[in-house]
Length: 337
Image (cartoon, rainbow, N blue to C red; front, side, top):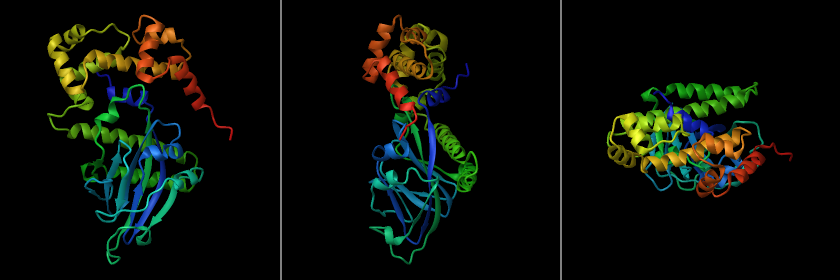
C-alpha cells in the first residue's frame, strides 16, 4: 500500500498559507512576534492554529523562540515555529525588541506583502551601532485546524530550521519570485504566495522526518516504521472498515500484542484509540465538504448509527456534528462588512 498519510492529514486539517511581510534590516535590528494565538484573528481569521515562518533571501540573522537559544539563519534558510510560539529574529543573538499586536490588525487590508524596514532605532536591547547588518527576510503564516484531530502539529518541534545547504536554496528563489509577483499586482500573485508557503511547510516536514534519529517517538516516527506505518495506512485508507488489532496485526505481519505495544510506544496511543480519533476527523471532513446526513457520514467512517457517531464526535469536539457543521458553514460565508 502506498497511501500518503501525511498528505491525507494535511488535506483534512486544511493547511493553507499566506505571506505578509517583506522585511529589511540594517545596522542592528530585531523583530519580535507575539504568540500566534494573539494575532490569529488578524493574519488568518479562518484558521484555528497559526504558524509563522521566515525565509532569509539576503544576508543572515538569528532566530529563536523567546527564552530559548537562538540559531543562525543564512541565505536560503527557513525557520518555522510550528506551535505558534512568541519568537525573535535579529541581527545578533540575544537581542530583543518591543512587541505588540495592534499593527497586525491595522494593516490586514493592505496590499500584500507588507514592507517593513528595521534598524537600530527600533531595538530596545541591542548591540553597538558599529556592527552593521543588511538582511532581507520574507515572513509569512501557515494556518490549519487542530480539531477534531491533528496528530501532526504535536509531533513537530517548537522551532524547525531548514538549511539551504541541504538543498533548499530553491526556496529563496521561489520567495523572491512570489514577492515580485505580488508587488507588481499581477493576477494570481497572492495565490502564488499561499501555494509557496504550503510547499515550504510540506517539504520542511518531510525533511524533518528524514532527519529524525532511529529511536525517535511520536506520530511522525510511526509513519516511517515498517509495521506501524502500514497499520496507519490501512486505517487511513478505509476508516469505515471494522478494524480490530487482530486484523491489523494480520495485515502487517505482527501479532496482536506486538502491534499494540509497538504502535502505542511510537504513536503515543493504542491503535483503536487512534482509529477512533481519525474516524471523527474523517467525519468532520465529510460534514464540511459534503451535504451528506449525519447518519450517512457515521456509516461511512465506521459507526453503526448516527447516535453513536454523535456521542463520539461530541466527546472529542465538544459539540454535536450538526452544530459543528452549522458553525463551519457560517465561518465560510464571506463577510458583508
